[in-house]
Image 1 (cartoon, rainbow, N blue to C red):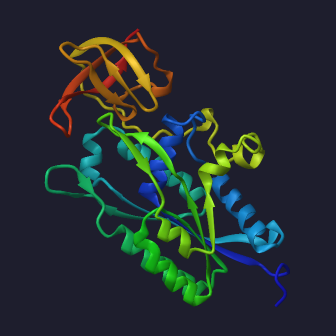
Image 2 (image 1 turned 45 degrees about the horizontal axis):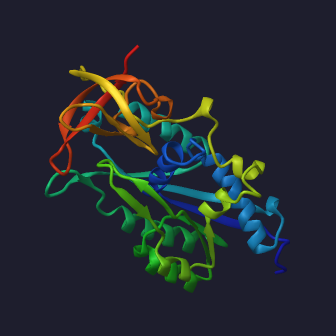
Amino acid sequence: MEKGNNLTRIGVFYDGNYFLHVSNYYNYSHERKNRLSIAGLHHFIKNQVAQQESTDERLCQIVDAHYFRGRLTANEAKATGQTLYYDRLFDDILSSEGVTTHYLPLRSKQGGGKQEKGIDVWLALEAFEQAFYKRFNVLVLIACDGDYVPLIRKLNALGTRVMVLSWDFEYTNDNGKSMTTRTSQELLEEVTYPIAMHEIIDNRVRKNEPLINGLFVPKNEGFSPRPRLLQEATNSSEIVSLKGGYGFIKYPPNNLFFCYKDVVDIDFNDLKVNDKVSFTTEKGADGTDVAKNVKLLE
């Protein structure tokens, strides 16, 4: 069969926790201040596959898309306010774009906190099975973990070409510590088409192209999966500093750290230094006090 005259069948597989992590980065830390758009990403994928496969974009079609993520149980989500609503809202977005969702409940881990267990294995098994039976020409993986290398090797053996969308960036975690997100080098070396998304998005020549702008949700249509917490605030003070995704509130003897997930009823990006806010305090992972339920005071 002559390449370029036949339909190129694309399967897309999302590591949902990674995708949300990247989307949060662009919404709170990057100059774009917007979330990633599923529809825009799918349009971009078809365009990239067409370029890499030297074919017409109209002949490149996403025939299957799957989203895998761990999430809170219903009772845990109910206790945090509107988490269930935002989960359902994002489910509607995924469904409207033909994405099949796969969820596992988050498990408690020693020392506190929640962890995903088994999601990456489930994704790998589903991706291989779907590629085997549906004969994808190109499988697109939105993930960064080197644990997916065995999957890619199996897909290569099937003759399925693999494209990985990767993002490398620095960010600040919930405790104000600078962190780095990097895609596994081994993963990038195994795939047919490694696509460095951060380089494309930050390219000054391409940044205003409709294809690149389309990767982001317009602000008036944005999805913000931040729970609307209902606890009453017990303190008030003013913001003394703000940076990408986090800030500090004046509160003797030390200023209190807070991050974008702790802000209620307003977008973090709309806060300004010297704004008066109310808040509660909790112990952070390192045992220091942090601010929670941060609300702008009129």
